[in-house]
Length: 122
Length: 165
Image 1 (cartoon, rainbow over the protein chains, first blue to last red):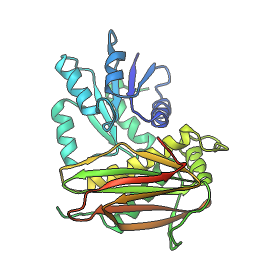
Image 2: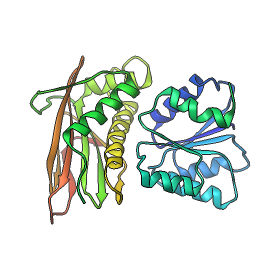
Image 3: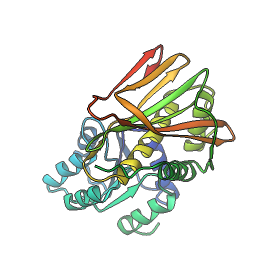
């Protein structure tokens, strides 16, 4: 697994997969999860290069998922892709250990700009 | 808490979402509110220091067109789970951007989607703040921002053969 995409919307996961491919990262393996609980299960024994996560999800929110993996001393790069990008949430995300936030709606270019510093050129 | 969201900001948010995510230009219209036949309503609730909801209402045909544009594929012939998912995600994006325009202390619910040809969705204890009609090649659809009346509990009631996801 190279990238873990976490979103409760199946169609949004499809859009993110497409955006990742459009950004040129076609060779990377992308695995999907529907919420934080499922994402934690899929992370077992894996060392992805990046996690892209929604914020507002059932079972376990994106911020609680991030808190769990940082509490486990996992430093995997983590980015939120969320419709909620208030200043309050940005502060909370970054202080919890997120690397970036991408607001919905987003362009393929916004995804590429966020991924490039972490995944390198493509 | 003052509500910073007005009709102009709501229009900007909706247009931005439809243009950016679907490459679908839309214009505001003066069409009177009302949809007949098969239709869908997606809705998210905002709770906390400000209480209200945002809904998106369109026909089944329009919802299929939105899904096709959203997923860059031919529109489905009929409403399926992907169409409902796209409608829910559109409401989630509108609600999330509305929330972001407000001050702190507001939570966003999961989206709900109702579809069918015989349903009525009433949000008890709330009133319409802004209802905007938008037009694209597939016709008119509506986005509504409702706000809780002071001192009245807010809850959603739907009736009929509708399906709720």
